[in-house]
Length: 90
Image (cartoon, rainbow, N blue to C red):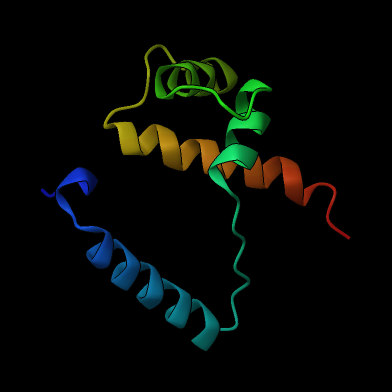
């Protein structure tokens, strides 16, 4: 299993491009949030550190431990952010 930290930024950009293409082909909406938007939504502070984010994801979701791998906590934070933002979308 590959971990995201082993990928170059070029590989990540390529994967992102494929995901966007497939979403567009299937007429699926795409939502993007900046790291600061996600951090502010989860912790109330746009400059939160990774450990703070992981702990808040754990607390917000009522988990017994911080999600592993680290990328899982990042993905959950993005999902929580979208859930909250989409409540106010027109």
